[in-house]
Image 1 (tube, rainbow, N blue to C red):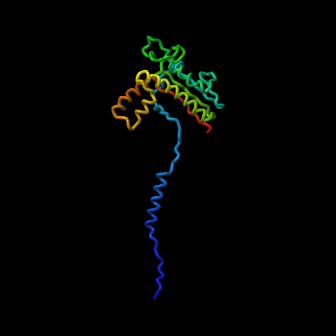
Image 2 (cartoon, rainbow, N blue to C red):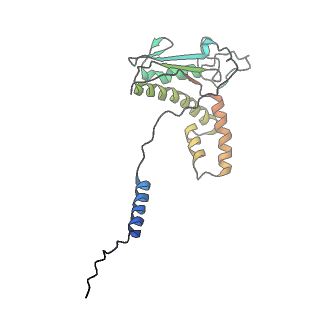
Image 3 (tube, rainbow, N blue to C red):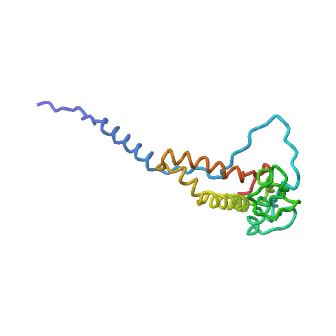
Length: 206
């Protein structure tokens, strides 16, 4: 009897299915590292020249290459920055007869500081050789100043912290009716203390 010398074939169809399933498994389970940074909305480019700003409405914060912090030209520790920023934003320096007078501000009402929160601007400049870690700490303290003031007014007007209002608003379980109400209240608080943080373009040593 003649011997069959044919080489048996391997069914590659099942192997392709297995390879495809493994590919899907790795795509689903693999964690892809993403860049992290600071949530900031850049202002739109304008063709018209900016309006003149009174110097008393500008709060100047600088960070040098040695990570030393200067506020209005004076050396300040990072732990004092939040309080100093709140004092500036909440000053309410305009007179009571002024149409833009801040009647909810609880500051010292100094004539050499900000007129009202709507006109108050924090100008932050960082040396390109400053560390990125210190830059982030300064940003966090400045943001915390705005958050503290917004929380205060939200508690006074709506008996709830501003951060809690935003958390409930973005919760997928929150009803449409509640979201509509919260949206109005959140906008009202943001308008009372708008975040106006101006930065110069810088590069950092990571």
